Image (cartoon, helix red, strand yellow):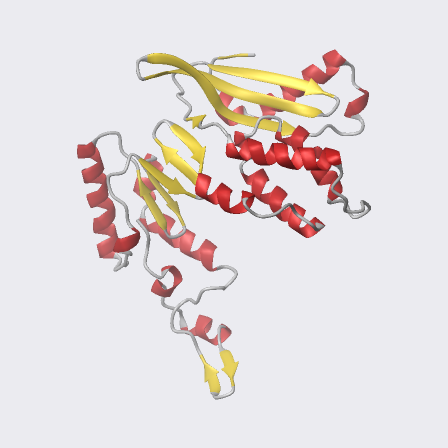
Length: 281
């Protein structure tokens, strides 16, 4: 569900109105409701939504991201009950929702550039296509923008740091912008990785995990996998990928030290998956 005109549903206090005055050629005007563009408007609205639905959020089946409300359920009957609870509170606080932006009874949805279902998390191909159809970046600013976009999906890309290493170095202030053969190859490989990025399995906390690690002179990488029953068949798939470049002091490590470093780093990064669970390395 999507709330209608988001911030405009918040009535401003008299003190807030004074702070949000605007001066134009025909006089001074005050906003009566919270306008778009205010720095703390998103955090205020998120906090307000959290106070309206505290029980539902604590139970874990309601997800709210500013003006987007997502209700999750395992059965249709349970879903109807939860929808009724949420809608009743929406009516109680006189909140308005945009019906044309609402989607009910879907087993899959698009949110924050991802395709989310009860089984997996994937990249929204439409979002990716819009960026990949653009020409190759010609300036550092354009390259930084591309790397920022690609980095948002790095958990879907194996060895992201290793692939993008030369492109990040290109964005250094001391580096002259030049797309060498190595950088063009890295750029194309990163585009291909985004296009063919795998769906990530949703973790099942009742099943063991598998942690794969890899360390070399170019960086550290790890992949968290799990074997789940999908369509009555055991399927091993990724939960997430992580990677980073090595520091100058770490480059002097031997092979065994590097592998140990990678394992410790992976355990620290993925502790929210692995703490209290059974896993193989």
